[in-house]
Length: 125
Image (cartoon, rainbow, N blue to C red; front, side, top):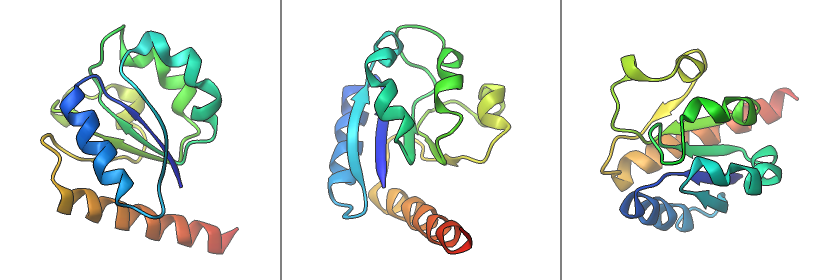
């Protein structure tokens, strides 16, 4: 499964990169640390299966990217925001939550659920 990180905190980005590298079933396509860079990643976003998404990122309002990420099957929110403060386009769809600092065991449990759901989706198609 292909993934992208949208995160502007270097420590959180490095942690996610490290955890992703440990997963045989994940391939990191890139990371975005500024919403203004989104144009350079559009082709990769269209191929993304899992998006690790911080909801507060430099360069603008995260809602600016909602049209670009609607087709991504799995979104993992990596924000410290409480769920009530999530943008409506996230609240209205299924998503996963990994609070910072991101712990390896929770990351692995989250991915286990994602991999299981992906397998079931593939069985039905």
